[in-house]
Length: 185
Image (cartoon, rainbow, N blue to C red; front, side, top):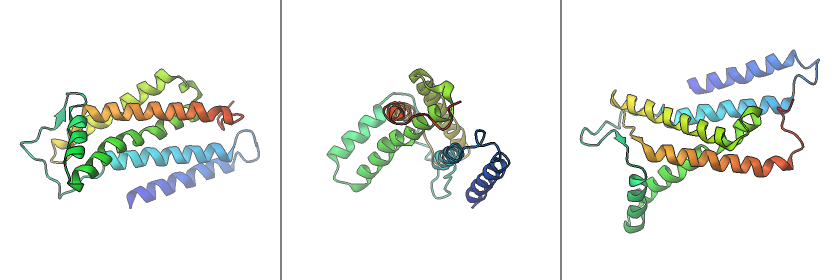
């Protein structure tokens, strides 16, 4: 409920603030405002999916470690588990964890160069994707100390960063199709 109120307030604010600039058509572009609103919605969704679902039904398992520092070991286990196990739960977790982490950051690689012209280099997108994912994992690790079921995993950072790269490549592929970005100055 709080998510809906905050997001509705943001949309209202953006359009009220933009209304005063309607008299100067070059300073207000509806496309620009829509992209910003979509970006904020995307960021709120990422935070809701990665940090906010703190369920009381999922308690921390004291025997399960709260962090995985070994790259790709869990991804390998999930992949081999999916291929070797007839259980639907393993396949579902594989899809949610691996594919979900890739897809989660694709919009970041698309939005950043559109909204921020200074972030149109591959290295900057990779860096921001990495830092964003790393921050989320550290918050999950800290929240785990308060009894949440989240686990910080290096695989998530790798997969999220690759997702940001995919988004950047999609942006580069689609950018020539457009004459100018809505944020071009």
